[in-house]
Amino acid sequence: MNALTIPGAKVLTCKQIVCRDRYHVHNSPIQNMLALDVNGHYVEVTQDGETFNARIDGGPARFNLTADQVNQFIQENTQ
Image (cartoon, rainbow, N blue to C red; front, side, top):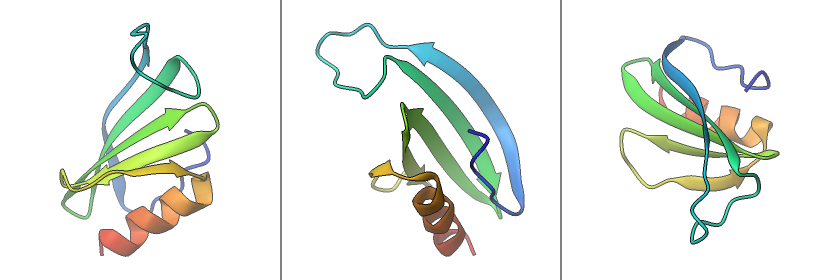
C-alpha cells in the first residue's frame, strides 16, 4: 500500500488476510486491507495483487484500479 498518497488520511486499521475460499476470485490470495478516515469519510481500500479496490462511506465499490486511479478516486470523492 506504499503507492497510496492521500492527503489528510488517518489510518484506522491495516491488516493482511489470506483468502482460501475456493469460491472467491482474487488476483492474489493475499489481501492487504486498509481503513482510512479521509476528511471525515470512511474509506476502505483492498490491495489484490497489483490492483486496488476502494469504497467510500459504504457506497459502491470500485474494482481493479491502479494506485494512481485509487488515489484520484479517493481525493475526488472526499473533498
